[in-house]
Image (cartoon, rainbow, N blue to C red; front, side, top):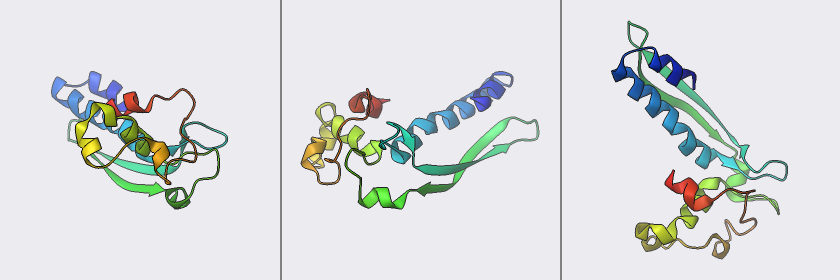
Length: 131
């Protein structure tokens, strides 16, 4: 949000870069957030974004330098917890995206990896995927 605010005070060309940086967040969160027993959208990752500025102080680009996932969640979930949201979002989007069904994806309850907990609060996995 800070990047977007800075971009609004700068040239129009720079604003699109700030917006692009901000748009990475939902994607990163889908790959790094999961439902735990305490929180439906718990961050299970860390990220470091290097933001590059030009000589005028305008954002010129950004890169993710570190992305740490909770490794234990990748192989096992406690009863009542979900794996990373992206797995459920992809499965939820199968009816709207033929390519996903062509990959053999479907309802998350048919996969051992995702069947321990299918719902995280009021999250709509198909809509989240399309976002």
